[in-house]
Amino acid sequence: QVQLVESGGGLVQPGGSLRLSCAASKSIFRLNAVGWYRQPPGKQRELVATIPSSSSTNYADAVKGRFTISRDNAKNMVYLQMNSLKPEDTAVYYCTSKVTTSTFETLDVWGQGTLVTVSS
Image (cartoon, rainbow, N blue to C red; front, side, top):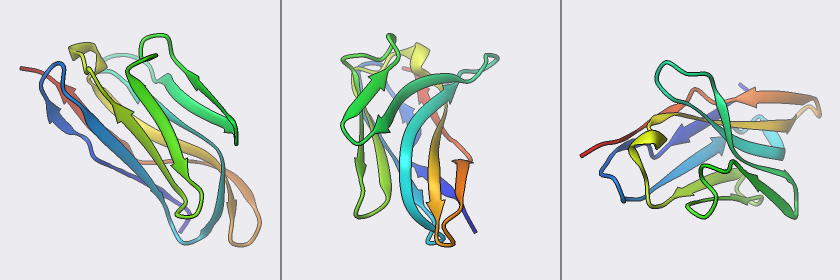
């Protein structure tokens, strides 16, 4: 099954940190472009950070300087380090990637999401 699975969400106090992880299933041969999106309660999904190519990263203005996206190509993993969290960062966070499968198809895949709640 071609899937991405997020983990690491939870409840954190304002100013705290969390690290989200995104793991690719064994049927995924390679993650190409990768990204994190989030959907705050009652709002539309929005971009958080992306790695569109091997050497570049993009961030939403709201998270610049606080969040860091990274990847481990050997493990087919994607991470989102979130520091100095604010209540407005509360959302379901989704991992996404344009993947190459073990049968060499190219697919756009989304994870099921992990909830991050920032509250005192």
